[in-house]
Length: 336
Image (cartoon, rainbow, N blue to C red; front, top):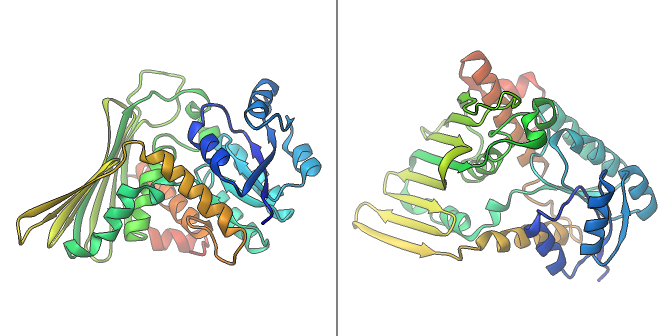
């Protein structure tokens, strides 16, 4: 089987999980790397057997004519690369978010419809064993009534993420993207979104939020509260799902299933390094999809839905109103 010829755009040595996943995938051949910083481009070239390196992605694509591109750039730089790739029939594997904002998400969706290429956004929690196992057991706890999810850590906003124009926002569109994707995976699109956000940092040069409280309400009565905070001492990632018959508590390396009727609790333990495998599984899912008719998931539909929730969060915070997702979908002429 022919290998997928891949051009990497923007990946750095800090993306260790991606590098390991690419090096472990026998179906991928990295043919070039691109970065506006020539030192970083040379460094990444050496990581992948001294492949060709470039500082201009237009030149790189024209020279290498890759089957696929892997985009790891600041959020406001994704669209130009995605647009060029889709118009040239090149598949797109990209870091989150799907788009810089909802308008851009709709633009990518329309470009996708006119292309034969495939798109996948990195959302590795869909491939993590803990969260996959939690989804498998949702049916055992009955009608879902309430969900509390939190993603908190101590990493002050830095670099281009401080700039709202470049990033599109703070903790919601950055780390929050992952849990929003997971909630969409579990429960689908909520009916309404309410959000409060704050900038807790004393860094006056930072324009983006570092704290958010998000409430999602579903037509079936399920209520979700999501807390995002990047300025706390203890890192925590947890989803607690309350059903009529039981409760699920999912962390990165453990799942607890509590059954109310029997009073029993089942514990599922997973590898603490499970994200390494999750990255590899998502890479494999994308590259294997290129040789069949199946669209990779999360793809365009899931990406637009995630950007819809993000847009609703910022709109709610700006107006202090609850945002109806169906009305927002109609007003922005989205196709979900």
